[in-house]
Length: 464
Image (cartoon, rainbow, N blue to C red; front, side, top):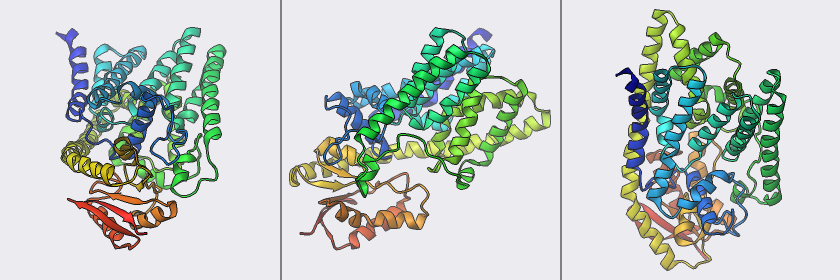
């Protein structure tokens, strides 16, 4: 009976992501994050043989905003949303399998490794990533493959690690510094050949992508176009005290402290803790405010350290920690329930969105340019070009409302003909009340007149 326990735990680890992926099988939420449709559009561009391009932007320049590996993964399935959603979910069991093998490599028993998979598979960020058109799970799977290979001292393993790490970088360029932090550890362990192979692969790939971005960037681009055409090809850092508050959630802080104690207690000289330490430092110094999903690359590391640290704590400390974690798990269920509710809202919104896209296709010239929160999906359906607004993550709530409410001024500055407004614009950034405030500000601007309005969806045209 005990022999079946690991397999039962592994099956349990798959259930939350499988159910969420099934619930989102037609990806009704696509475009709600803006960046997700950008990946989808890049995949479609590759699938249609147009090259790696920003097809939704006027002039259809080369795509330099997001690195190419995840769009290349999406490309073969881009024309079938249900197949695409399941190919996104396939990354979940792949990642859990790699976590299982990595834990076994660390000397864990099968049931312990499977329990670690349950902890990861039930995490809300992991579940949401399993049905999201963002590269988070692909990045984590490639990172774990690199870590697993680097723990084996052979030339073939070094080549595999270099390929996996380079691929991980091509899904998230912000990983360059943490991945590079694993190189000194290889040298300290006198694995010089492995370090040289890994360094050559990773840094060579980083040089190639940076050269591509710099060759296709447009330093003269101003306004909304600059966000698309001048994407950073390397990480930039500055001291930002606010980042500490963004990640210092009490339950997470407890898990992190216990995890640090667990890894310290075994004193393991491993590349993954080296990556994790560098990743945390880079996250705290990042100019962008960290989001919850930013912890995914180090989540297996935290959970593994937490399990090891918990086993070494006194009984009263274990009890206190378990209570803290139960509170954390209970709170993490709230965004997951909200995500299920959001799926239904987006699913109900699909007919309205299709209706306005049909109107746009029939009543606007092919050369019309739009300001729309989901400019990539708008182009996919109607072939109209345009831009979206991309505010700094550090704006205050009042400044954020003012930024979006100033949409007509941005549209005029870019010479855009139309503004598309929906009830779900910039969904992750604004509350329902704030979106109504933004809509009221846009409607009050006399520069654009309403030419289409239905159930909160509006198209406004520039007055001539």
